[in-house]
Length: 305
Image (cartoon, rainbow, N blue to C red):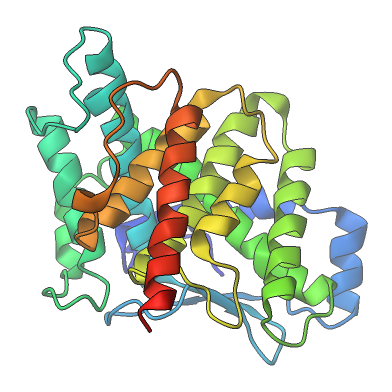
């Protein structure tokens, strides 16, 4: 994977060098060298695609990590939108008691963030028109819009999220997984999580955890089921496993995850069924209601099959 991207296929590809630098800096040098000696390819392949998103990343038969750039662009979009929605659409309005349980697109900044979200969603096979690559260069992006503060915040979170995805695939190699099973995927998630959290500088830990959480939440957008099937853990369970292993007193973790889940629900017309919580002291309290509702949704889908 080349970190130099003068004319990126998607704007998000401008961040390749940052991701590689983060991945290498958090890797244990001896372990990484041993993995190379054991057959792991030094190459990380960026798969450029103008079609719909069907994959995220994989470890191929030549022990190369492949990453798909259409997913990367979508993932950056939801990083940007969720951060701006949370900060400008909720936290800022809570200070003046203007927040009434839903985000109002009452500023140009919030409207534009929503456009970024819609553009990202348009890369999925969801029956909507495929978003053209040129659209992403017109909206806030990390290639030609770097003076936007929220672009900078999204870039940092995104790079850690993609580093988590790289470590997940890397862990499949180091743990000698030969197939995707629920247990193997849980092990790879856990290995990637602890490698990052234990290796990161304390001042960067919150950004890294936001990256891990947003990366896992991005995976639920593939469909409306949350189901991982026979090969993967359910999407909400993977998110909750991380939330239960971090500083639960830092409420913003729970808040951003709740916003992303509501964005997912909006995309699949599930938001109308979500419980309305009029009083909640913390986002963690609200998330308990939210995750309970997600479990009910999953149970209902299983019972209706």
